[in-house]
Image 1 (cartoon, rainbow, N blue to C red):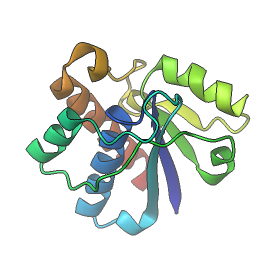
Image 2 (cartoon, rainbow, N blue to C red; image 1 turned 90 degrees about the vertical axis):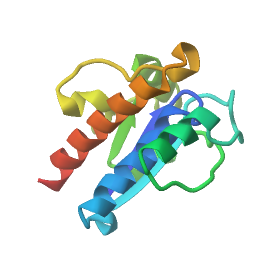
Image 3 (cartoon, rainbow, N blue to C red; image 1 turned 180 degrees about the horizontal axis):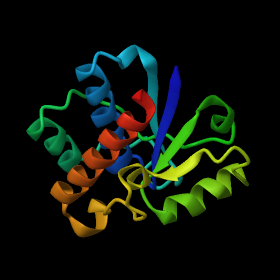
Length: 150
């Protein structure tokens, strides 16, 4: 079983969307039992907050099933529990290394790397553009699924 942790700054917009988009892709491909998927934050700023309403609206708009959840913080213990840490941007890389210290097993990658793009997912918290963020997340999740399933 592959274990994936999606990580963003606050765990209320991008990483929960990625978590549920990936799970939906796996479900549609009848491989949901092959993955353990979660999401978390590198910052305590939104700790305990629910998924952002606009992120929920995007998932509903695209018929992505989701469950209500609250933002959680990535912990140093997570490094040994997950195979891949799919981060949303370089700021998350700095945050994750503040928590992990190092990445000796090369588990930390930008989500869009799997789609052949060395760039971060647009942060809708600042831009307000949840459509763009969703499209980028979907592209990254499809590519990550293809990478892991094949």
